[in-house]
Image (cartoon, rainbow, N blue to C red):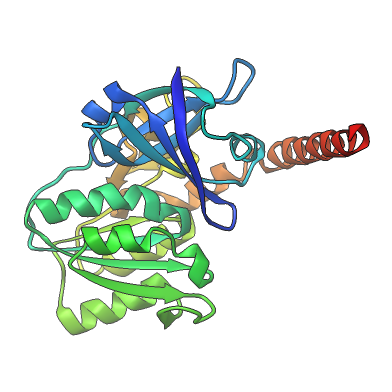
Amino acid sequence: MARILETETIAPAFKRYLVEAPEIARKHQAGQFVIVLLHEHGERIPLTIADSDPESGTITLIVQEVGKSTMEMGLLEAGSEIQVVGPLGSPTHIENVGLCVCVGGGAGIAPLLPIARAMKKAGNHVVSILGGRRKEFVILREEMEAASSEMIYTTDDGSFGLKGFVTQALSKFIEERGKPGIVIAIGPAIMMKAVADMTRPLEIHTVVSLNTIMIDGTGMCGGCRVSVGGESKFVCVDGPEFDAHTVDFDLMMKRQRTFIKQEEIARQLFLKHHECQAIEGREVQ
């Protein structure tokens, strides 16, 4: 069992967890993830490791509360014990390509952090383009600034940085500064697809992480099957990172919608149960 040492709300529905996991912290490399199980009746939750500290034996997980399981995790406090297995997945290929552009959107900024840090350590000039709906959803700004050589921010509503999408900022950057050696994009599937569509005709090597489609993290359930270069791949065991120009994003997004109805039912049942518990607690008082 792993113990949660600290919890912190960093944005609406976003929490940071500092977890005691010495072996995972020692072996973790950029791009890898863990499987979290809250209790014996819980759902396996794949979460990319946002940071690790081998000396203190801790890993950092960033969780966006969207469905039943992540909302349940949001109720945990420091001192809670959870099961954590990892690190899993293939690490990011790190090399010095000169100019590296890291593009992150929303929750995708968390897995981008260790990658940007590793690419900068390898000698690259790292330009990070981060975006969100509003300023508060552009998470981990201080950490990403430390891991990058330059920063560009965008928000949908213009409340912070440039008004617009990360793809617009990326297009402007390439137009003004030329082709980077690599673009690494992590965020919503529609964002990664847009980045891939932009860089493909320019022949810019582009890597994406498809971690959001993972379910059990072992390849047994088949829920994270994607088409890459016309071949079936499992994100959890073959990835989670792939050449963006070979990913069938349309098929991936269709697969992501497979269990929307069941996920919403589970979410509503959880909210109803939690609301009933809160009412009962007030009545007892």
